[in-house]
Image (cartoon, rainbow, N blue to C red; front, side, top):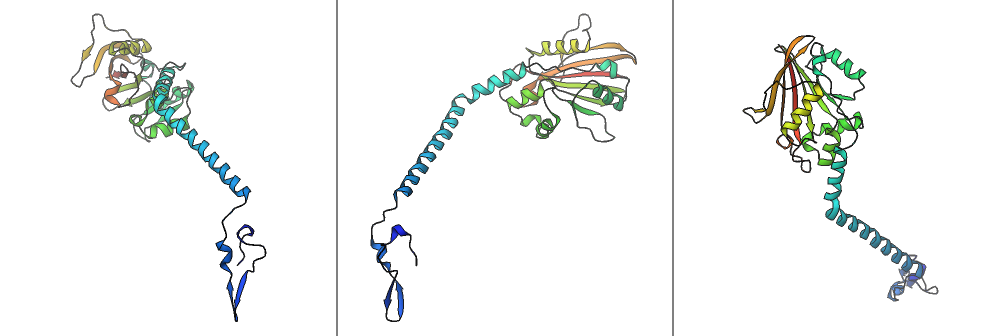
Length: 259
């Protein structure tokens, strides 16, 4: 048996002979264990590196606990107020078009879209914020809006909307989106009306339906004739349980129907 140099005496025999049998000489194991200085130095350096790394990880964890919520709130605020436009389509100009023509118009407008509808089904498509990519959005939306945290939701909801058609009884086209800047339901509905170029009927007041939607209704003249519109909203928190978004945020639905 060949022991490391620092574990044996240089002049010690490796084997002890007992008659015709050779036995390993274990006497070297009785001497004090004194590793070389370079091994001791390496152990000390390793311990110092481990201590520094552990301290760094601990400081990051403590900082996240103490200041993580503040940073997240600041990021949410920044996402909400960033320079990105919803760029809503005008429903009155789409009401007479088929789904393929609508998709072509969206493409010509430069929208980045994520399609939910299957082949042969009514059109259901999401317009993405202009500062996001389709690949990233596909991953995010696959998990569901309700599973987003506030930072992710504020990035992907601001500047996005979902467009759908229903052609079973007449034609209804809808745009649904989150208004994170809304002060209340009234301001959200007014913003939606202005985006479509519609005006509230004279003397019209906001109403509340049986399921709690705040809404306003009216009519508008289009190339297809007189169509009925309805703009409704509910608190965003009624739709999605996402902690950290503005409490006044609204989920808005804009609908135009040609009978």
